[in-house]
Image 1: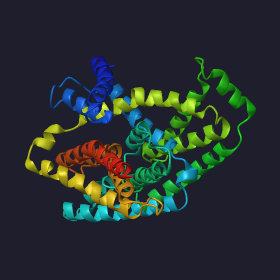
Image 2: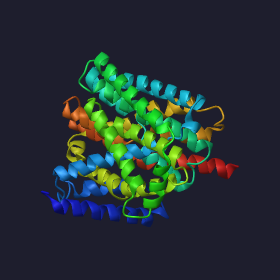
Image 3: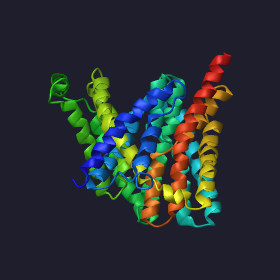
Image 4: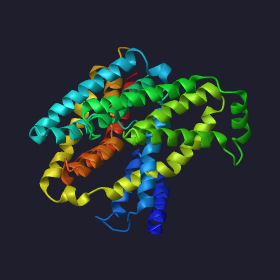
Length: 393
């Protein structure tokens, strides 16, 4: 390992972030992810210059993003998000994509390649960041949580599919064919997951759950690695494999060991939110190009513009197409705000745009910075809407 000090520093920041969140929570409930990113920026090359990259750091960060998307996929409860709710969520995302592409064409002077990057980034939802916030507040259960989960799932899955189709370097026809084959293979895996497991499976899970064997956790990690590898073989973004792995894992555990699934998830979440996910967010802060954001006035002007566009492009369609039983302005407004909250996919999409030299460093920094602000501001505004309705009631 070339920079072991950076690994220690990142883990120290991962410990510090929840302490800061706890200390400020009595005045302002700031998501821990904000402290993780800001601390990463602080130790990054544009401020203190303490953190350095090597292959180990990059690999752990990539695994953190994959784990975040995996956990978001796991949270999808098919019985609650299907039907009219899912159709409305899909319609809202299609409307968002059309609006995002149109706005991006105007901003980029009809540059199609740049517009695809910006437009797709504007349609994403940070389901992996929103769900822990809802869970911590006790609002994940119930109808409102189910609706947010449906709209957030499509807001996470839609951009991943768009990335697979538009950013793979293949022609649209070839990319669609490859994606279709991947979908068929994944459907086969789902069919396998729905089949009853043999009795020995549940027995080994129970026998090793509190031992060093941890068969269930190892099996979950095997499913994640397998789907990541399958996506790589097909030349697709590995985030698609991570999302599919999360959904597949839920089907396996709920179908074979439903009484142990919560305990297994707790162990996987401990590994994710305790190590890999904060690693990703802190490295995101380290990689953030603060100099590009501050070099001239344009990126700083674009930051509030992109923040507003996240709300208009993603939030307004969610507000308009919210299910009929989500009555009242406040829950619909909260749904729009949660749907507009984004970050992980914005980081991934802008990284692709920078690698392909499609967007500039300033535009990428403005997009990521606006996404950071969305994680801080939009959930706070959403909770204010919900608390206002409850207080009025």
